[in-house]
Length: 332
Image (cartoon, rainbow, N blue to C red; front, side, top):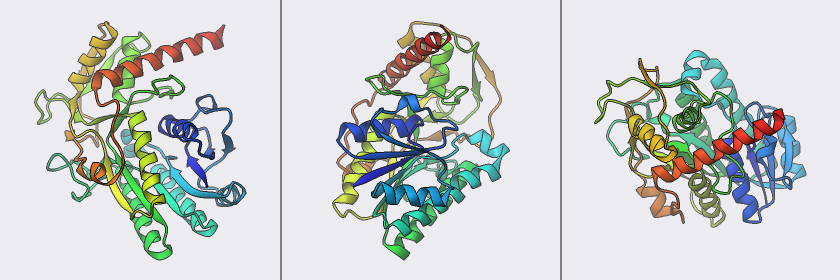
């Protein structure tokens, strides 16, 4: 009954690992540590340093640990980077997922949960966005994830692998117990960047465009707390173990916050002012993306616990302060 978590030393993956360990699940993590960190993981968890694209290693890991379910996070995730390096994204996200699925079929893995993204919806269209909405991605990142979704459907039909696809909206926050959080240097997540700027770790925060067709002209996103997202994966795994049908679910709260609203929340929670500059739009950024979450609530046993922007910011700030202390301790 072991669960393999790919990318388990990363931001979202490490929260998933802690949730599984808290629930008493046997876990093995596969991560090449390109953006992940061992210190984010419980010391009791089995760890394999490697890539999902290494078929021999993946097959060996699946058999050795008797893996029955895979939760697949390992991927490149920065939209502007994907515009500059599309082939790298197709290689790491799509081709490596193909290799992982091939190994999973060979090893007889029963259940597969895939970390997808709202970027598959492109500019979004009507809001809130339903899972049945058109999927015309506008970035190689979104395309690479959509291709993986298509592969999952085909593999499910051909080999009986049952799966859940979770399309994340904007993930933020940190473990309330401060065991893990977003730790990547130079991360592009707005709430993390704003928290770093509030704490003086960045000189300024840039707003990429104020001329979008939104109430205040800045992009609107549906922010979901990372711990609630991890719990959605646990609910998806329980669904599959109950012989639930393969399905796709949006993961969000069903309402959005603009860039300016996020900045105001960080200033409010931190009690600090910080420098903000307005610059041009970034390629691949839709004006607004807000999830329709009716399907996930109707199907999975999942109820958010941290559905509040100030709470998300509070946990993100606490983690940034903990990271600062860790760095100072390492230097000393």
